[in-house]
Amino acid sequence: MNGSLPFGHVFGVPLRMHWSVPVLAVLLGYGLGRQTLPAWTPGQSAAVYTAASAVGAVLLMASVLLHEVAHAAMARRKNLSVQDVTLWAMGGMTRMGRPKTAPVALEVAASGPLTSLALGGAALGAGIGVRVVTGWEVIAAVLVWLGWANIFLGLFNLLPAVPLDGGRVVQALLWWRTGDRDRAERAADRSGQVIGMLLMAVGWVAFLRGAPGGLWLTLVGFFITMTAGAERQRSRLHAALRGLRVTEAMSSPVTTGADWLTVERFIDEVAVHAHHSALPLLDFDGRPSGIVTMRQLAAVPGLRRESVRVREVATPLPQCTVAAPNDLLDDTLDRLRPGSGMRILVLGDGRLEGIVTTHDISRLVQQHTLDSKALR
Image 1 (cartoon, rainbow, N blue to C red):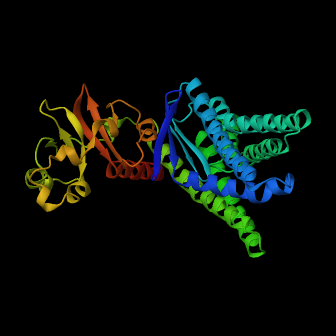
Image 2 (cartoon, helix red, strand yellow; image 1 turned 60 degrees about the horizontal axis):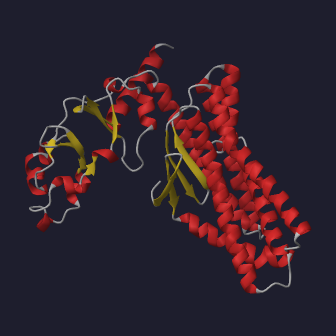
Image 3 (tube, one colour; image 1 turned 180 degrees about the vertical axis):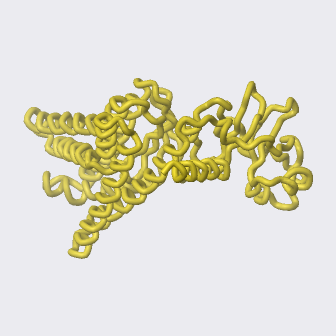
């Protein structure tokens, strides 16, 4: 996701945080310290409320992280690839491979909400226990608030709306019952769009009636509606590409350039004669070292093009999406790196054999559409 930065690993999975997370933490802490805690535990100093609200906001963000880590851990346990976990203002997002069976899909989807509900129950119990045993009302209030927040998070995520976990659960159950994955995905995506629009309507009405939280509900509904629509397109794409190998989509031969050339020489000798906007680079041994786009070349100031090597402005190979010729195409698309675009370098024995671009995928989808119409 654009605007996110890495901040660690868990179980070998990279963790990323969007800039909106600190903003959300500040807003939650402000509401907890200025409204909730003074109402629940009056008579404390402003410093106590501030410190307690900061701790509560951090604990809630940690709870959201544990929710997503549960998805990642279950996916790894079921031998699914996990690219990364990203936290952002709407919660979290775990990028992983597509489950191969309905039971696996169900377990992965349910693991997050169950973790949130378990955390909520534990926090509520701890809050009650702290108040009874020690009488520390502020700490108890923070724990109770954290408990209810986690329970709300778990229950909200169980709404039957993709991309929420409840939508994934419904999708897995329909897939399990019917044996038709495509049909289950379409049904879950439609449910997501309907519920998203309902949330937008309810939130907007609430906002017009003076409830500021209605605006947030409207934004959540808009996000769900848009994401469900994108998921629907993605489902159609996977249906069209299912069973195809990367070699069936790739363009070959590919126009390449030496990575040691200066930007000026590369533009004059390679880029101006190319028919693609992204060009693979080769090192001295003829092995791929990365990929450079016309936009990256154009961003180099004219005076520096004579001294800057093209490899210095290119995307290095470790940050590119690569695949073997016989890899399944839909699995490879699931591994596309964020921000890399629809560009897949096809490698065989360390040598470049071809490239898959948006144009190649579009061609296959159009062929699938023609074949489907011909069979009717």
